[in-house]
Length: 290
Length: 236
Ligand SMILES: Nc1ncnc2c1ncn2[C@@H]1O[C@H](COP(=O)(O)OP(=O)(O)O)[C@@H](O)[C@H]1O
Ligand SMILES: [Mg+2]
Image (cartoon, rainbow over all chains, first blue to last red; front, side, top):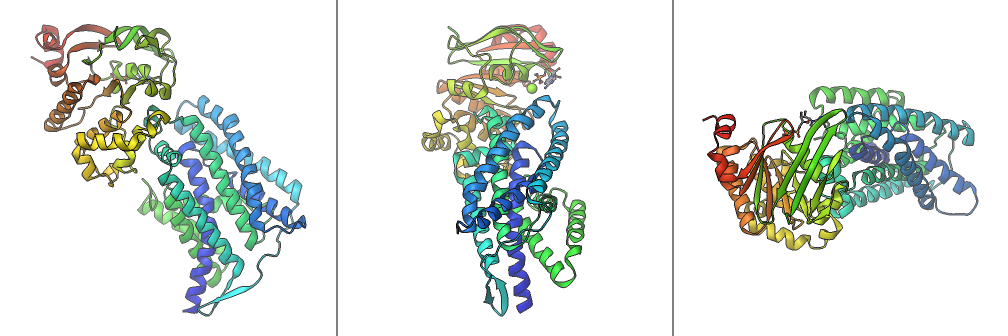
């Protein structure tokens, strides 16, 4: 029973940041149709901003890094979209070609970003102390930092789903991802919405990065691992489905934690890929896909 | 003055010309039809009116002002509403949300609650199912919702692309009856169809398009007696 609780709660802690990462990737794919290989680099960028802020001796809570990291990543993503991806979309003869080209371009951005990060922060793993105590829940010792991270991540997931379902802008994002042409003829400015969604995806990556840094070490090369996990979750949850990304994030968090707790963490990604393989055969559109 | 007027419109996709010197007028308060076979250029014409395509030459006038070259969101703001071929609802949004999207433009957003009530009065079936996802609806219901969504912006002119396509004869009849009802309320309708007989029964005026050219135009009912139309489109 205690082991069960331990695995469940820790799995959800891991899953909560997975959900944020995947929600971001899903938002970028949903309207802008970009499977962003550089997604993980923005997670690392936000983590390193948080780390730098902690090292600065200002004594600020690490959550404060959101105020800095979110606008930075938003701006970079937005500019990337209006300069690079928008042009690429105009030059592509159809959406399929664009999607393929966009992946290649995002690979390029991944290499550049990865290089810059490595130059700036070196190869050594980074970690700062934060809420080093643990909390006893039904006999299981759970990290307080982990619980804090999960709480904030869940709040962000809830706020984001409310934004999508209740606001005018959120509804136009959903409409554009379901039928962009029909949305355009109702007055939705598709080009702006695509850039905005790409940038919102960046913000979610930044949130994930800030939170992740509070409970685990990261290094300049961690990004691709985050991207891989986000891709797996997005496929699991259903391409472009935000609720699927949340569900998939928690499922993968729990599965991943189970594997690393009972077997070894090196098998985690193989197990994830096995899940995806089975899923692609049984239900190719993902858990909540269209 | 006509509500909408197309003057010598030419439209190309790359090197392939799809519309040739199209001239067309839609008078206020009328049902005007555009008939033609698959690939004749009907949808291209609508996309040119609504700003998705720019004509290579010619003018589109709405209420006497040029609107060619404007973006779709400027067109809807001026009072032209476009129901795309195949209803094109947002499948994972509820019926109510689909209606709200019809009032997406800032000019209409604040009045959306009253407009939705107006649509529920016009299409009671939509109110019964307002919380359901659009993808759960049948073909006829979808077209009803698509029409309601197009009416949310209180348009002066509605462009309906192939409303009856793929519907059972009974559903098609219901849809045409709704068009007649809208017309009775003073809405101008441009009805683009392959269903020649039923369209001509309700149209005040009709155009026939073949290979991107308008080949015939006249009052709706006289076309039903025209030999060429009877042979080529009605098979009698
Ligand atoms: N996006 C496009 N690119 C190139 N050619 C197109 C495109 N859309 C339509 N066409 C061509 O233009 C012609 C008219 O098509 P369309 O307007 O869709 O006809 P209709 O709506 O009457 O069936 C057809 O020959 C079609 O192949
Ligand atoms: Mg057509």
